[in-house]
Image (tube, rainbow, N blue to C red; front, side):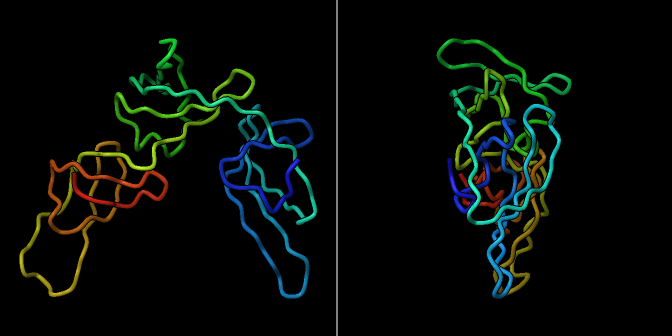
Length: 185
């Protein structure tokens, strides 16, 4: 059992015996009242999201999850296929379960797929992902004296701000958690 103040994004907790993944956590301290932890969670069995308010003294049961290292292979229809690097077993995960992580997936990238009771419910990406720039504005030299940035669309469909020297075809490193540009590779 963990206290409500220890709940973090990405954790899997049981509420009334049903596993939920924590999508967002907000700690609210309204003036001289007691603190409230507001959580947005997704039920792993029904895939429905709900918001839950907890007091700091409330306790939740943490669910047992099994992470397996897998390699992303390909996508077909709404399924994204991953291969277990130890057993070579392949599984398909629905687009709805993956959410925004599909923008950072590219073939042969190694990820951790998390399972609860034998069913996949999420993917943990590496901290940094290298993606190719497919669309951005051209660089105009001496346009301004201040540091500037421009929008760039990457190969998975993710859009982020990049420095002016980055051009189409460059491979850049992106922070998978925040989606921000890190450096040119």
